[in-house]
Image 1: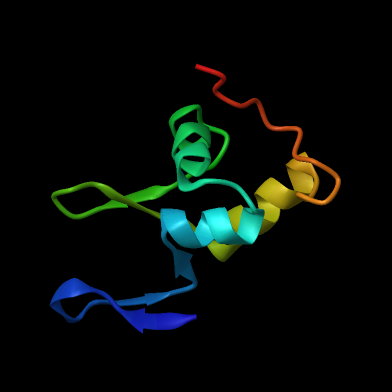
Image 2: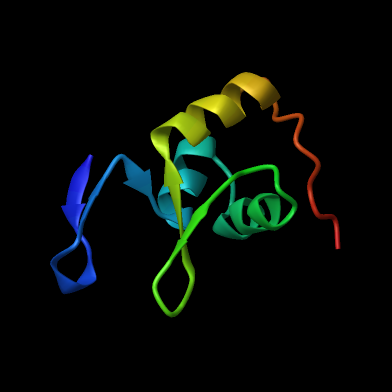
Length: 79
């Protein structure tokens, strides 16, 4: 995956929080919570500290926690 980011930067194989949520079949807030809990490792970019996730991290997460069809075994923030 390649797309232009702000200021002409190119991101290859990096996914936004929303894209990760779509891949995983969960709400973007769930992805943020998992990232905050250390279950998903993100690179933080720019002054807003936006999260970006690698394809390797997506694959690692699915391998470690199962797939959405079988239900993820990740701890979820219930608050």
